[in-house]
Length: 317
Image (cartoon, rainbow, N blue to C red):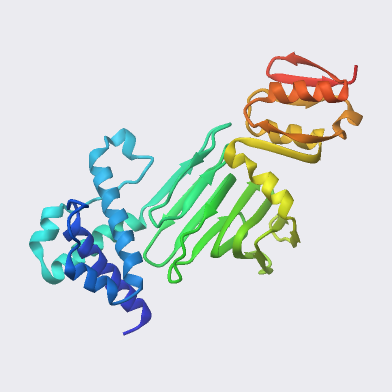
């Protein structure tokens, strides 16, 4: 039997166990048969957790009205009683089908201007979406794929050796090798920052490849590269402060800081004076509070600010 066939058999058996044990009192003694099955192969525990997660999503799909269901997933489910009643090979096929249908569904996650949101996946992967971000997520029995259409997201990837986790951002592809990392796609520029483990990166247009380890950043400008990799632990820590709703500046110019704040707010910062744009700043600020940031700038630099519509303008006195 091939490795793929073994994996499918494990997934089918896991689906059966998930259906069989669903709804039990969690304080009750575990099923000896389940314990024996789990002990027979180290891959079974992960498959069982995935099957439980898929089954819980089926329950959620049943409970939600159509207006709330659409953003999550659309599935055709098989009643649990039917799964239990059929038994044997039919039950294996039915239970496996229920899980596979959930896994094959494509979900969409997005955030609005200034919104930062966590979106845990069924496989245990933790995802945090930054402002104005749009993701497509597809989990199947063979692989886990995310397409970053725009914006920025951080991934703490659940390790599954037999189901690769890949993120596509335009022409760039990133495959996690047991890791945590962020990907930003703004315009024609893509940035990768690895906070844990390693990530394999490649460009489909040129087939250029690179392996990026923790504490390193990768930049791709345009669709064909080149891939630029450099170490920058401190800059990565600062740039990921958005996960806590913060902007950390350590020598960035006022122009760079204004661009960062403008990603989160309808009230835009405009720096009129060319020399003022080059002033370098240090500090920690809230992403959603451009007024406090501008007040700090005026205090530190002696500049003055005034508001025109949805713009906070800065200039020399």
